[in-house]
Amino acid sequence: MSSIDRAALAAAVASLPERFKGAGGTVGVMKDGEVIVREAWGYADQDAGLAMTPSRLLPICSISKQMTCGVLLDLVGDPAAFDDRLAGFLPNLQGRRPTVRELCDNRSGLRDYWALTVLHGAHHEGVFRREDARPLFARMKTTHFEPGSQYSYSNGNYRILSDLLEDQSGRSLAELYRRHIFEPAGMSAARLASDTALPLNGTIGYEGSPALGWFPATNRIFWTGDAGVAATLDDMLAWEGFIDRTRNDANGLYRRLSAPTAFADGGPARYGMGLAHDRIDDIAITGHGGALRGFRIRRLHAAAERLSVVVMFNHEADAHAAALFVMRAALGRPSSPRNGAPVGEGWAGTYLEPESGLSVEVITHGNAVLANMGGGAEVLSLGEDGAARSVGMNLSREGDGLRLERPGDNLRGLAARLVGTPLADIAGRYWSAETDSVLEIEAVGPAFAGRFDGFLGRGPMHQIRPFAGDVWKLATPRSMDAPAPGDWTMQVRRAASGAVEGLTLGCWLARNVAFRRLV
Image (cartoon, rainbow, N blue to C red; front, side, top):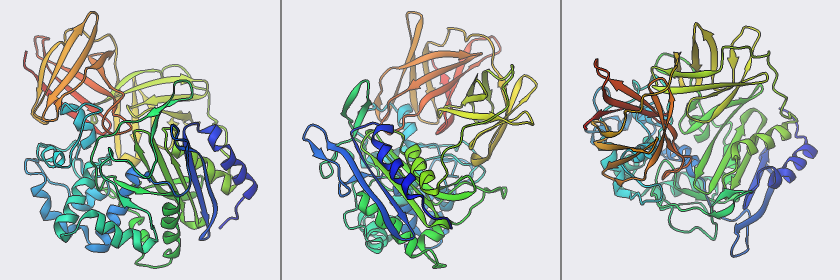
């Protein structure tokens, strides 16, 4: 166990407002069960001049997932006790249903329900009611991989878990959180705040940028289980203190939540029970982030060091990067410059990975390979063996394609290079049996756009841009949840005659959704 570099930590904390510009924020650090940093800056409400403090409530969003799983373990014990109840939530699902444990570990294969709201016709500033979730799950007919075989982040896993817990216990999730999480941990102000349209105790979330300015974010979704907990920095430090106090208890809640887990093939997984498992150099960490339009939250815990960091922003700067920056400073491990062999020719290009159905765009810059598979560009360094690697992705050249591996997702494939420009014959109406929704694509001069029409409404127009080969990109920069799905890969399917017979859409959260051409 290492000591804290307090001077480096103090300098890092002092630099956060300038490094991660926005309306306001808080940061807390706990070491050996003692709070050594408890800091706030900026404004919870800029118009009212209401200062941000450690006692302001903020939505912790997806950090709620570990607490939902904690209720399950404390209330029921074995998640398998709920397995036979999933048929009622997924009545039309074909093939093997996932287990509840696979839901908890994001290995269910269920497509993310917030991403699917786009295909069901939702508007990004529309209302998603409590009663909209079960009809959406009931429409699901397939998983986008065999349950247990891979990892894919799916918020709906925990929404289903929330309803299971309430149905089984006869109590509201708010009461279950209070009994099993908040009271034992001493989180005195924390509460379930599922309706994102309702105000917290004066805290406003802001979208924007230093160049554009900051403006209040609009949220109108109801979420529970996958998110919904609101907490102060003091509450989050109480959660970290609870984790530290129970660290040596063999039956301790966080110890059970953070236990190692594996894929169906026995390979080690990097996610389980609502917690991501990662490393800072040789130090294992667990934690999670949270995001809602106008808010970004991150907590990290290094068990061997008895060190925790919590960062909470009421704006959309990178809270994960901020938390890593603070933890590295505390450990005396500043970020080292990225080294790598010079990148030669042949890497850059556009590719399609067949199993996920997702496009991969690769560009090179100096000694770095930048690869974007739909979730933002990842920076990879080239090793002496000719392979490019980052924390999340490995790439190596194979013929004219790329051998791709995402160890954390248990995904491996050969991404084929795409060449040529898509034909401009995609305008028309398409229907998906998976979502029972329609996609209308229009030609607007030389450009294309499309909108979805489904049980959640008739959505806005989305830009559709040519990518390469017979692949297009449908852009969703704004959606009901945050971050938005971004660019959907849209593959054109053609009959033997060459006529368009359908499309297959996918983003990282919801892959391989087939649409059949109607007209």
